[in-house]
Length: 339
Ligand SMILES: *[C@@H]1O[C@H](CO)[C@@H](O)[C@H](O)[C@H]1NC(C)=O
Ligand SMILES: *[C@@H]1O[C@H](CO)[C@@H](O)[C@H](O)[C@H]1NC(C)=O
Image (cartoon, rainbow, N blue to C red; front, side, top):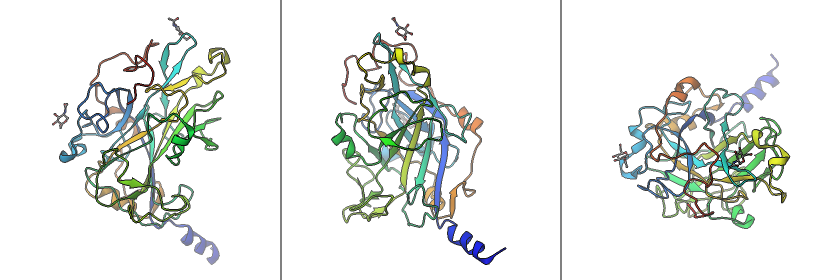
C-alpha cells in the first residue's frame, strides 16, 4: 500500500465522535414536562422518544430518566427524552388527520420516532476534533417557540428548518417555513440546538437562556462560544420524517394556494417548530462516547435491535382520539392557544 494512501487514512480518521442513531416512538401524548410540568393535558400534542420513565413531572431533582427500564433508542445507555410537536393535515372540509412518521434510510422497521445526532463539529466534518463537554444529569433545554409566527422570529433559532424530500436522501435546500408544494417523500423537520452552555445552570426560566449560539460565525464554521456561555457542548440534532405522501393530491390542497399542513399547536406556516430535550445518558456514557474516535457507527456503545427498541412503549396519560379525522386539533378548540 502506498504510504500516501496510508497517511490520508490517518489524517481522515476522526479525532472524536459523531453519533447518529434511531429512536422509535415512545408515546404520542398531550404532555410537556418542561413547559407545563405536572399538567395533563398540556395545551398541545407531542411525539416523544427515549426512556420509559417519561411522565408529566420529570422532576429535575430526581434524575428521573435514571428510573427508565427501557429506551426506544438504539443505544441502550441513552435514557434521555426528546420530543417535538405533531404534524396534522387539514382537509378542505376543515377536519384534521395526523401525519404518520417514518424512519430514515438505514433505520427501516423503526416505528415512528426520530433520528438523533450528537456532534462536536458540523455533520460533514469527518474529523470531529473539537472538544465538547457532555450534558450533566438534570440538564434540559428547548429550542424554537410555538408562539413565533414570523420569519424574523423563526430566524432567531438557527438551523431549525424543513427539507422537502424528493426522496429519503434529499438534504437540501432547507427552509424556515413549511414547503409550499407537495413533497413526494415527505417533509423532514430538522431541529438543531445551540452549542454553547453557561457551564452552571442545568435549566433556565425559558429553558433557553442557559444556552447560546457561538459569539461569531456558526457552529458549522467553528465559531467561538461567547464569554457568557463559554462551554462547548455537543450539537444535538433531531430529524423527523413526516410522511405527507398520502396527502399530496392537488385537489385535496387548499383552494387559496396555501399549503395544508399544520402543527399540533395550530401553526400553519411552520415558524413555531420547536424541540425539547431532557438529558438522561447513564453515568459518563455520553462523554465517553464523545471522546472516542468514531464517525456514525460507534462500537463503543451498547446497542439493541430496532425490533427491541420498538418494544419499549408507554400508554398515553391523556386518553383522547388523535387518529380519526378530527374537527379540532387536540387541546386547540380555537387556533393558536399557545403551548
Ligand atoms: C412521575 O414519575 C415519578 C418517578 O417515578 C413519580 O414520583 C411521579 O409521581 C410521577 N408523576 C405522575 C404525575 O405520575
Ligand atoms: C373531510 O375530508 C376528509 C378528506 O377528504 C374525509 O376523509 C372526511 O370523511 C371528511 N369529513 C367530513 C365530515 O366530511
